Image 1 (spheres, rainbow, N blue to C red):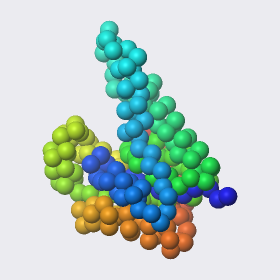
Image 2 (cartoon, one colour):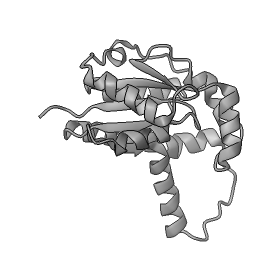
Image 3 (tube, one colour):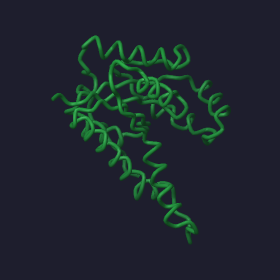
Image 4 (spheres, one colour):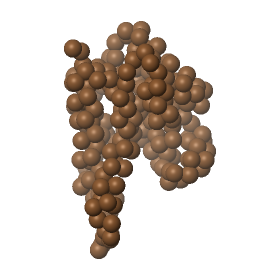
Amino acid sequence: MKQGIIVLLNGTSSSGKTSISIELVNQKEILFHHLSIDDFFKNFNEFIDKKFPDFKPKREVDDQVIAQIIFDPIMSYYYSTIKLFSEMGLNVIADTVIDNDKRFNECLDVFFDQPTLFIGVICSKEELIRREKIRGDRQIGLASSQFDKVYCFNEYDLEVDTEELNPIECAEKILSFIKSNEDYSVFKKLSKRNVSVS
């Protein structure tokens, strides 16, 4: 049995990744399993809230320290789960934000030997700000803060512009690419990036 396809959607918060993922899961031609990084963080937060309902930190912890202690290992667990699904022959939609060189390098390490279709989910900064305000469930300014880091990649197997195409059209474009049997070659050609140490 072949490895499952990894459809790696890279875009900022509010760019439309989850809406596209839902349409890919709902179509009947190719079976996909949707793994969102948001779900992994949500499950961790729900575990803490349920296990320790009166949890109150005794001191402030810097965001960078929290990232090193919790976020980075959760991201590693997420990437490993995606690879496991692929190894089991299951097609996976990876709905994530690659917003720094360390995460990009880890993706490259974990997915290098998998059939990975690297897709840029593109949206203008102005539209992202508008969507954030409408959603009401995202920190205002999150997408803007991610914009330059996420969209510094200029090589994808495929790009979908969510201002020009609705989620169904984006999903159809991705399916057409998969069915064309073109190689998913971009991810294998990318090189690791230098990680700056602060």
